[in-house]
Length: 341
Image (tube, rainbow, N blue to C red; front, side, top):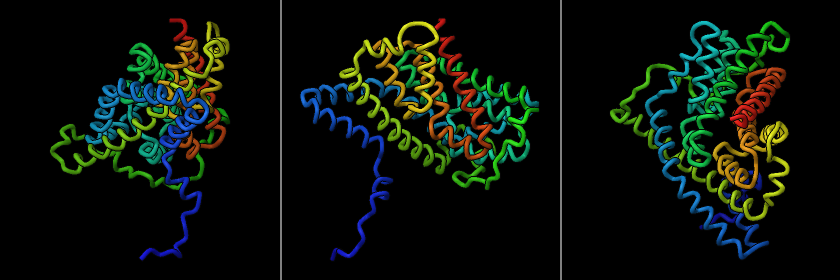
């Protein structure tokens, strides 16, 4: 018999259970249905067709990410923080620019590394480069914006890592970077043991690693699938209702202005790295300058919540402000250089 005296779930609890990506997609389609019913089917059709076209890129990226996690390749991260400081900066920027490590994996390792005296310059290089590119992001970007743009964004990620790392090294003796760490307890969201040992490239011989591969594949399939669904629904609405001449007048053309606008808007407005790719594709087709798109994605990628929280959790506000400053500076430089080519 049903217990009618049971207290119904509170609103905050229900909000936490809702999938924000699917909720946003539903709200977009609902708004179209209410205000422009004739455009509901075209919007739905555009969203599904666009998602279908990117499926090969998504599957390849998801399989690559699952393989990296199943083999334990994240253990190679520890090698980025070995050797002389200059060597660490270069290796950390390179590893950060191509690695698929999540914030949960990185926070405990970085916390322990900083506590043991790893230079902040190397950590800054990794932090700045890491959220900008990974295997999944690369193939999604290549599929939507072209291989040249994906390669340029990868180079920009490594370059911004070097900018931040070398900048911290040059200013290391100043008050800005003196005593950078907050007082913190070692995070427990992931075990640091995941960053030790040697990778097992033939993971299919280990049942636990097979389970890790399956879990990673399903998790990333759902994650990427729902966020790309959001992105294409928003892109469809944007193409239907956002006047192209407005985009062209504000963020189009040549010069520094659209690049600066892209960086300033991108930093606080970024929803999700994967969702940003088709949105940028749509805006470029509406007249947005490609340099502005590059600066938007760079600034937003570094300042997005998961990446920013990882930094904020460990360092003092002045160091966090420097992190954001390097992000904006690097975003503008990346936009300018991309526009020049």
